[in-house]
Image (cartoon, rainbow, N blue to C red; front, side, top):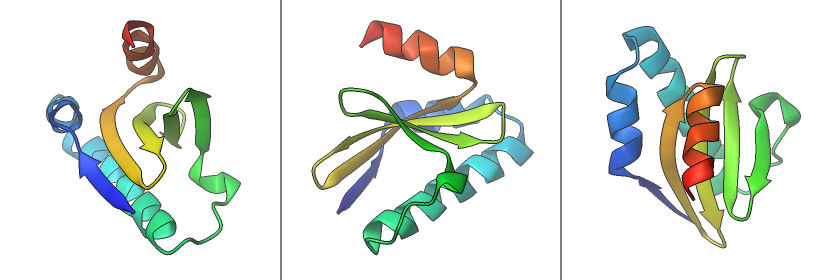
Length: 92
């Protein structure tokens, strides 16, 4: 499986407090670890299909990561709040 962090993901991290940045990076690495080893994806990671190839991973109630998962490719697109994710999905 191939993983890619889009520039939009990196840009979205810049505006977050350093604590949130670290938590988001930790969740992304945890997801990469699970997917690269074909391990069971437990509900605790908060992975949810949104629409088409777009998925969301939650970090607590506030922070979320949106990614595009198509066959053997995962692209991390955006990190932000629930409203940030909704706003992004309206444009795609």
